[in-house]
Image (tube, rainbow, N blue to C red):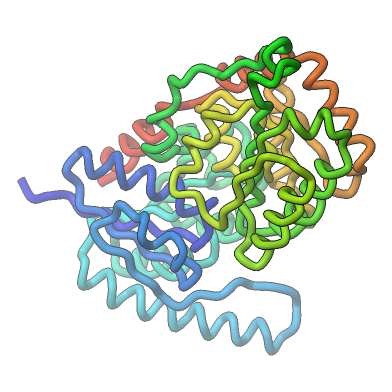
Length: 369
């Protein structure tokens, strides 16, 4: 029997690529050849791709209503479709699955033109705009939430709830027990309150500006109990590290963590954005989080993602427009006074995790070939 071949198309940010990488790992366990096509933003993560081969096609995002800008975008996407057609003829995949973002548009359109079966996976509680435009053209759609806002009416009969796939690095730590805080050990200095902070690829500057400064303003007694792990943009790394050092706070700051899920598993609290992949990983790992949804995100998708965890009692939403240093200090001190609240939230997160999502999505892909 000939080896199956699948092409995955995803935008070049972690929110789209991480579930694509997760599915790639599962399909390769099933002896499927996997190619990933994305855009030029992939450079940082290309080295971590488990695919047989990575490919780049021209793409652009539709922004605003300027007719000249829209025309340029349309021309770029047109070039992308032509490039995708050449790529598909060369690879000859049995199935093409898109994970969202405008870089998925050219491969999915080209696949439809060439008669190749296609599908989509949408990670968010709100269907992305590219996926919404493609939904009526594809054969199947996997979703991460039972109800997806803006899913076209005519596409609802194609939907299967799979959940959002998480990478093998996340699955590897799913059984790591929550490292509960001990009030006496904290008071005696035998244990630290470990907090992991990461801001994703968008809006990370705010995390570098606000949180180190907020921790620095705490009383020395509280600062001595903290151990911070923070992922920063490269341009922010030196000043963030310097502020923690000046404040006497134990901290590890890096531009990129090779194994962020391992850092997550060792943390008592995560502070992050609430992209779909982050929310899925928090739930599978079972870690409580303060979630700061990306402001001005299209259709408030991150806010709706975060509400899933907050409604389960697994985390707390802190909208960026409402954050104050005093309010954050009160919340943090509350955790130190009542560490059981963190453990309860960790258990709640674990209860809504979906570690089988990648298996379900791989089943959907192979059933559709």
